[in-house]
Length: 121
Ligand code: FES
Image (cartoon, rainbow, N blue to C red; front, side):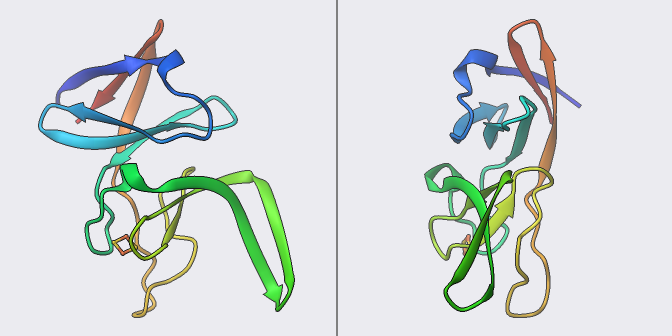
C-alpha cells in the first residue's frame, strides 16, 4: 500500500468533484455535507467515462409520474456519458443496470492529517 498526499482539505469545496493523481491512478475526490472526504477511482464502472466530468446533485426519487422528491441528505455523482448515478456515501449505483446489477465505484481509503488529504492506494 502507498500513501499519497493529494491535496489540502480546503481544496475540496462541498458539492464539487476534484480530480487528483495518486501515483498512476486518476481519482475523484468529494467532500460530503458531513465533512467526510470520499475518494473513488476516476473511471465509471459502466463503460469507463472520466467521472471528473460528471456532476454532483442531491438524490432525486419518483414513485409516480410528476412526483419528484429530493433527498438533500444523500449526494450522488452522475456520470457524464449515460447518466448513471452513484451514491457518494458508498459508491453504489442508485438504480440497477440493464442486467439487474448495481454497479459500484471503486473506493479508496482517505486519511486527513492536519490540512492534508491522504489517499491510500
Ligand atoms: S460510462 Fe458511466 S454511465 Fe455509462
